[in-house]
Image (cartoon, rainbow, N blue to C red):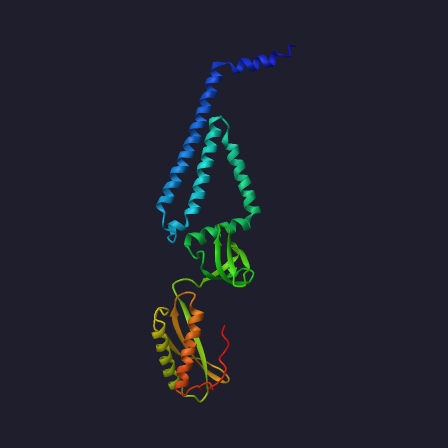
Length: 284
C-alpha cells in the first residue's frame, strides 16, 4: 500500500472546483452574517441611546442597560446559529443541549436568578437612585439605613452612616423605605406637666411654629401643623408639632423648631424659663 495515497486523495479533494466553490460560498456567507450582526448591533444600540438620552430619571432611561444587554445577547446568539447553519451544522441538538444546560443552571442557581429578576424590576420601576437615603429591611430580619452608592443588576450597595459599605442582594430585600423622595417630616414632641394649661400650651406651639415658618421660609414646604396631644405618659402630657421639609433636612429642622417651641412655651409661662447664667447646652 502506497503511504502517499491518502495525501494524494486529500489534494485531489481540495483541488476539486466544486469543493473550492462551496468553501468560498460558505466563507462569504459567514462574513455577511458577521457584518450584518455588527451593523445591526451598532445601529440598534445607537437608536436606543439616542431615544433615551437625557432621560435618566424616566422609566425608559432607567431600563436602557437592561434593554442593551438583552439586545446584544439576542443578536450575537442569532448570528451564531446562522453561522452554524451556514456550515451545515444541525442546530437542533445544539438547541436541545442549550435548553438542558439552561434548566440545570436554573435549578442550581435559583438564588442568582431570583436576585437578577428582582434587580430588573427594581431598576425598571426606579424605586431608588444613587444618592438616595434608604432604609432596607432584608429577609433575615436586619434593618439598615444608609446612602445608595450603586444599583447593580444583582445587588444594591449602600453606605451606612458608620462608613460600612453594605452589599445587599436584591432577592433578599423585603421592602425599601426611601427617605429622599418628595419631602420629609420634622416631628417635635414636647412633654408638659399635668396641671398645665393645655390651651395656652397649644397657642404657644402655634406661635412658635409661625416664628419658625417665618425664619425658614425656604426649608418648609407647608405651614407647620400643631398636631395637639400626641400621648399621655405617667408624668407628662406630650404635645406634638410637625412640619414638611425638604428630604434630608428633617433632623436640623426638628432641632430648630423645638427651640422655637420651647421659647414660646416659656414666654406663655407653660414651661419655666432657664435660669439666667445657666450654661448653654453643648453643641452637636
